[in-house]
Amino acid sequence: MADRKPFVGGNWKMNLHGDEAVALAEALAEQFTATDKVDVAVCPAFPYLAKVADALGSSDIKVGAQDFYIEPNGAYTGEVSLSMLKDCGVSVVLVGHSERRHVIGETDVLCNEKVHAALEAGMEVILCVGEKIEQREAGQTDAINTAQTAYGLAGVDAEQMSKVTIAYEPVWAIGTGKTATPEDAQNAHAAIRNFVRTGLYNNAVADGLRIQYGGSMKPANAPELIGQADIDGGLIGGAALKADDFCGILNAAL
Ligand code: PGA
Image (cartoon, rainbow, N blue to C red; front, side, top):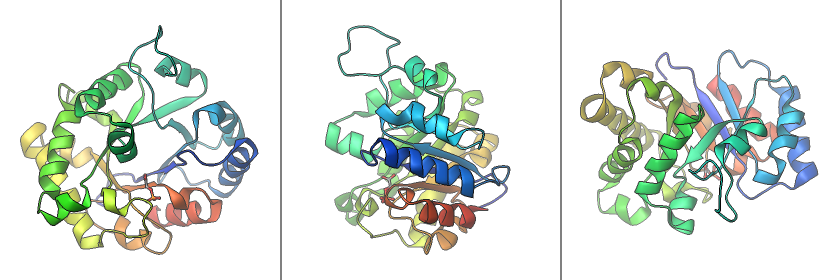
């Protein structure tokens, strides 16, 4: 885990309705205190962002958004801008989650525009990358990860990288109960970091960059995953929906 401060995000996806989202936020605020050793964010569905921010109160758990649109306002039916999210207490945004890439159809170009828009708006960005099962089986894991990283970060300055986290999320491991082995995950993370070091930026950016693992991380497998040299926390889906499970993962990161 090197000396980077781990960062654990909870991606609630399209789960947890009003009272459930608030109850989970209240439970997390109560159970989790040691945020000087780990950064924590939760990403509820849009309608509950403000309520969740209220419920988290002064807990230091950040509020994240699962998506946004790149324009500040205007005729974009159904979309939500970064300044609207800020009004709801959001300071972290996900970009390029595999469900947005592969279910909704977001392109690398749009992901890159989103990274720029979010950084310009002063948000922290979690850029998600990861290969599909057929790409892994064809030996393309590192090629896919580095390509998505390169597209996502195109035109981003080294100075802006302090606000960027990468989440390596093998698509076949998301919500499936299948987890990358710690060795496979470590290898993928190391390849991404090496590419950031030698292909995109420099030692300082690569050494400071946090790379989360995502894909069926649970309290039982979190210690071994987060214990790997290049794994700096996690982006958690299913196990983020219960306070005990999420706090179990946070404890592993501490
Ligand atoms: P999972 O989801 O933990 O349920 O596999 C992870 C994610 O999609 O971020």
